[in-house]
Length: 243
Image (cartoon, rainbow, N blue to C red; front, side, top):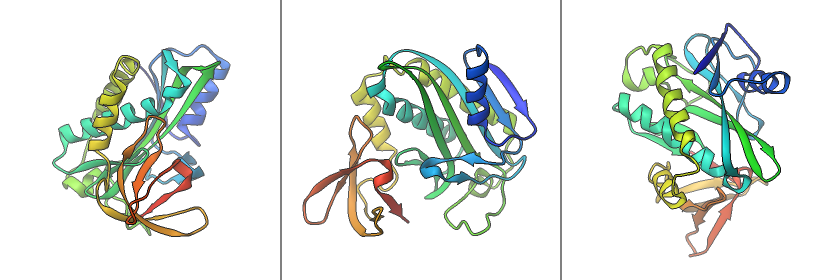
């Protein structure tokens, strides 16, 4: 494990991606920063973090034999790995909000951004970026955000968390090809936030719909059952949970 520590950077994912373009990068390289100025998240959102209180890093992992059609497998095993590690050190209820936000007691404490490097029909490497709210004691205008400190009531060592979380993720990625897809989906679905609960969702045009999450398919689409008995499926940017 090769760790590069930066005092500040715009985005650890961008920094790591640039490294792969300009040099041969050692496998399992990690870039971590005390202050990420332009962290990127899903839906082109900016990841907000407080300097020296959040864990913000990106990880580079080479992959062999992983087909492009298996890219959601990478997202699932990374999400599961983070949740399993947090469950081992926290008493809180930790879940995954589809597709890969990390929730603690029903509030968001972390986010993941995965950028795969593709050659032909295979994924040759992946960059896994994640932000985890750790020691923040408050959030301005973010009522649905929380931190490990707010959840557990204690301060955490960021270096220990870094080693613990990244070790779990690398171990999961080392077995991503060998893991039975059905078993991974089952484990992922067991951790899904609001699965089986009637909830409200917003479509891109602003329309609100109510439905119950039944699971996901192998491509990563969310499977939603509507009150009228219909079942529909959505890609990531086609629907947003209102909570």
